[in-house]
Image 1 (tube, helix red, strand yellow):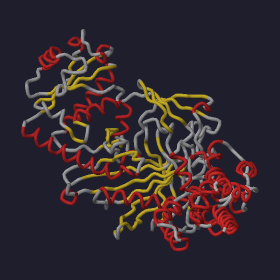
Image 2: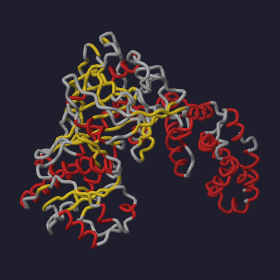
Image 3: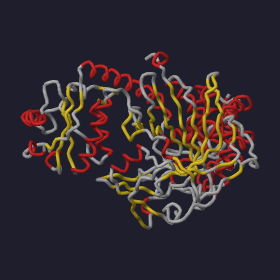
Image 4: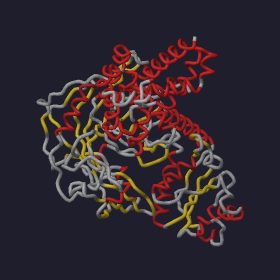
Amino acid sequence: MNYSELGLKVGIEIHQQLDTKHKLFCRCPTKLMELNESNFEFFRYLRLKRSELGEEDRAAREEVERSKKFLYKFYPTTCLVEADEEPPSELNREALEIAVQIAKMLNMELVDEVHVMRKIVIDGSNTTGFQRTALVAFDGYVEVDGRKIGVATLCLEEEACRKIEEREGVVTYSLDRLGIPLVEIGTKPDIDSPELAKKVAWKIGMILRSTGKVKRGLGTIRQDVNISIAEGARVEIKGVQSLEILDKVVEYEVLRQVNLLKIRDELRERNAEVVEEIFDVSEIFKGTKSKILRRAGKIKAILLKNFAGIVGKEIQPGRRLGTEFADIAKTFGLGGIFHTDELPAYGISEEEVKKLKEFVGAGENDAVVIAAGDEERVDRALKRIIERAKYCLIGIPEETRKANEDGTTSYLRPLPGAARMYPETDVPPVEIEDIKVEIPELIEERAERYVREYSLPKDLAMIIADSEFHDLFEEFAKKIGATTVAKVLHIIPSELKKDGFNVERLSKDDFRKVLELIAEKKIAKEGAEEALRMLCEEELSKEEIAERIGKAENLEEYIRKVIEERKDFVLERGMGAFKPLMGVVMKEFRGKVDGKIVAEKLKNELERFLSEKF
């Protein structure tokens, strides 16, 4: 696709958890818990709050209509602030200092005073019905491929609850994540290609990791992507957790908007229209063989005139316009929808389809959409699908969508408006002019230094520089050699992971033990693999590791024995026997004695043996 001709504009929002000791508005630790550690539960129904001007947010209104019950798991590490039973404490100073440091690294202007706001969120992810957020900086930039990409805002926010389960109108959340400090960084819509979007996200992520003060691991950083084309609309894609698919998300959203515009044009040519009536068709399916419809409370339908063949049209790989309608039904607690472009199927007979069309007055060129389940949920879902179908005649609706693992997206809710923000009265403002921070070395710069100072290959230098253990590398590189340290920190763990070892349990302290043992010559560098293998399976002290690996005091005696047992081979090959014999000796002493020492002693013994014989 020609993204320039399409007028592609992309803006990225990056949400990164900060590695602080306490949460943003209380003294609870910022650690996640096991679900079985929950000590009690409570539930809530959340209601819509109006803005100061009395306006309702459209996204919040739809959440209310979904009528969900929210169940929350409480832990010994959570408190009444997370449960919304106690006012929040003052803004976490440590988190604010990190946010200021990041803002300066992004060339941003700091606000004079930080004011906390409430942002309406009633999907249950916050017990309060809002998220606390504070603007810290604005109007910065990052340089990517020689271009300045604007960074519009940096906000300090509280992380939302962790969703555990969703079923039959009940959503279960865990409170352990709620309140962890995070920064939200929003770029300007200066990005004009999928590839550039990926590069910008990587650059900002690299800057964040360079602070050494952000959490790492799955779920600790998320990208939301705002995408539009000239004839389309701004669509927000939430929750892109893998940088690897970010370009694909942009590509597929552009494809979706282009295909929806084609559908709009075709529907207009057909003089298509959407009938606003909802038909009760339960009687038609009274004896159906469809398991889904048989167990449904109510079965209802809507009529889309001149939509035949359109509902089944693909708009993203593996996703059709009908899938868009099904996404909406799912947000209201239904399993999805059926439509006549795909029927008869799923146990629904041709005769039932015929009766359905006759009942609603559908002609040959019309499409019928049916939904089944609790009557109230079915009515609300079909009413919303009618709105969405009518928008097919207009173009692209502004909405919030969820990123799927393959880069496609699913409908979540309408795009929030400006009526969702109002002041937080429980948290006092904070002046930030007295906050002094240092700008750390960027990971990119660190990698370049490792290439220059330690002669590491570029790729390996970048991996080590981006590692949370880079300080160990610098501490031991001059003591035992940069290549050896890089092997201990990255190469050996990567190989062990391929062999099925649980390298995730290796801690910074484990790596330090192994590096210290090598530096103290208590094990040879070849022993690092065996030491890390043992530490993948159990906790061991330095002394226990050294004792298990041991030192070979009888190396010379063993070499003489090997030569004697293979003397005919040695006499035949002379010093040419060195390499084969080296393999035999190293098999016995790998990890116990440095390979250079083994080679030196074997060479000496071979020369002595051959000189005596000749």
